[in-house]
Image (cartoon, rainbow, N blue to C red):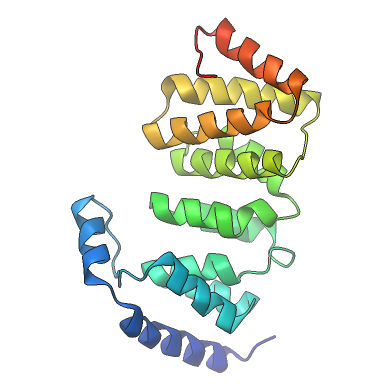
Length: 208
């Protein structure tokens, strides 16, 4: 367990390092698009990835970084959290505290897809009414399908129902994530492709 004082000092040093990564144009562009962080240095994802690699995986530091209401801290937290060490309860808290699409997407790509319980969480999220959680869920499932992880029969039915529902009724980001996941599902094999097409046709949808 890392000393609490050491963690606070590390967080302070990390936040100071963002000054060197500052990109005012990126931050301004986000503000113009309605993305409202309390503090946003506009650091690019590749720069943050370099920082995460330099620091390495660190559970205590990731927990503390997430608590900071700073865009770069939250993204770094998703990059630094060891997927095999974090509990589902912590992920639930992080999801509840996620208010921006960018953070939801970074969390899905950097951390959530690698969780030992990734599929369970993804199915839980796509069945809920939190649209950022739905977005995460579909992104995670798309990645799992890309890695040739096949759902069981119950999972297939649940996924197809929720994906079709999202395509028909959800916000554009969730709709796009659901469509991408459906495409990845279809790429699992001919049977899956037929199931996807059948579900879409039944609901008078078609994008294959």
